[in-house]
Length: 306
Image (cartoon, rainbow, N blue to C red; front, side):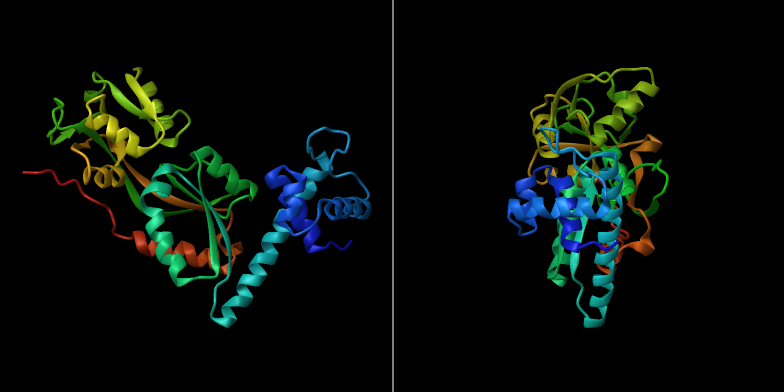
């Protein structure tokens, strides 16, 4: 049974955007031509792949199975194209990365800026996701690389540790804890906290820590970004637990005090997660090597004013 690459890309795109007209446009087809291709594809397979009776786009059980194979097949085609490119001394391809908030906002912009400047024919999609969604994306093959912090509990993936992530306490300069050398998370529990939005990896992590201690975090306000957290802390709305990278960056423009946490969990491994390193296209493997090189020995330190 022979399949056309355009048909496979169309089918996968339909699953990604959940809109038939937009999917057709993305693969440079008219909606009429796209519908005809799907009908012909179903005729070759001998079974319906998309439920035509549903008001919304809905794959049949066979369609979902076909989607998985189509995604895997297209990844192999991309890998073949990428591996051939190495003989032209030019990397070319598209990489999709799912990463936690710290990676997306703090260290990946600079790393990707440097990498893409060196490789003008490599394109990257970087999306912020909670850890669970990152792992599911890698396991299901909808993303090439995942970036997470903390222990990884997932089957069928390869985990590559590449740097360390440290959480610190951030307070206003006039807060009672400001200027402390080191504090435990438990010492912060009596004060009101500024938190990240519900569902974020960091907030979920802190909720688990508090729950394990049989306590409850006094959340005064929750916001959508590290910058918003620091602005709230600066005005003494509450204190916050942040990654050191983010805390140091915002300390440059805000009046903040950074205090080291003595809890062992405050230092976490950062990891790259992939389905199988050997199966990745050359350009994706090259990007992973670049990330590891750029982050080697890059653990920042807290410097308090004298």
